[in-house]
Each structure stands twice: as structure tokens, then as C-alpha cells.
Length: 149
Image (cartoon, rainbow, N blue to C red; front, side, top):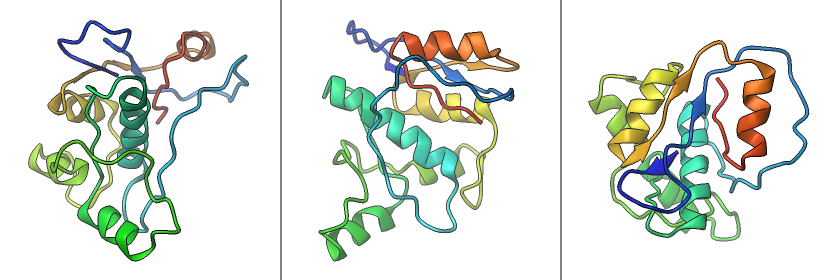
């Protein structure tokens, strides 16, 4: 994922849809974590974590929470880190996904829908279906965190 219009190395990072045997990458990518709320889909939280990753590399890259409860619970439980980066927009991933017609309950299993959702926040992304283990390893080796669904 990368922000459209920025010249930093965050342009056009891929989202991969990958269904193949697991593999061990040569290098791990330090992606900020989020605590997923029960009843919400992991894909939206995963997208938020990848947005946090690119925001940590360049604060011009936007990041958004999945839903308002993320922020409310953080205020109620300040000792628990529910998300790593403060949101740069009041827009929520879940609300935008609902408005785009990609979910009504938080479940989002389409790589194409995640690409469109990322684009609505200014990120350039692509879906790769039937990616090979070598494809995934190449993305990881280049320092780009993929979403694997």
C-alpha cells in the first residue's frame, strides 16, 4: 500500500490474496499491531495495521481506525494499547466498507474489496490471485507488508 501522489518509497505496495502452503520469509516485517474487537473482521484490522506501517514510515500516509469502539475502549483502558498509531482521519474503515457495499457486518473476504477500501483512503494497491510462495516471499523481501486472505 502506498499513498497516491507521494514520491516516497510507499507507492503502489501490493495486497496479495494468497492461498498456498505456509512459508518462512527470510526477513520479518515489523508491522504495528492492533487489538481486534470481537464481532469485527480481521481483514479490516489487518488493513489498518498495514496503514499504520506506512504511516510510521511517513506521517503523510493516512491511517484510520476500524470503528469508533477502538478509540472509546482505548480511553477506557489506557493501559492496554489497542492501536499503535493515532488516526489521521475521522473516517472509519468499517463505515467506509459499508458505504462501498463491501460488508454489512464487518466481514470482508474479497481482496478486490480491500484494494478499493485502501484506495478510498488514498493508497495504491493491487490484488494478486493465486500468488505463489515465491511471489509472497518477493513482496516480503522488498519490505512491503502484504495482506494474505
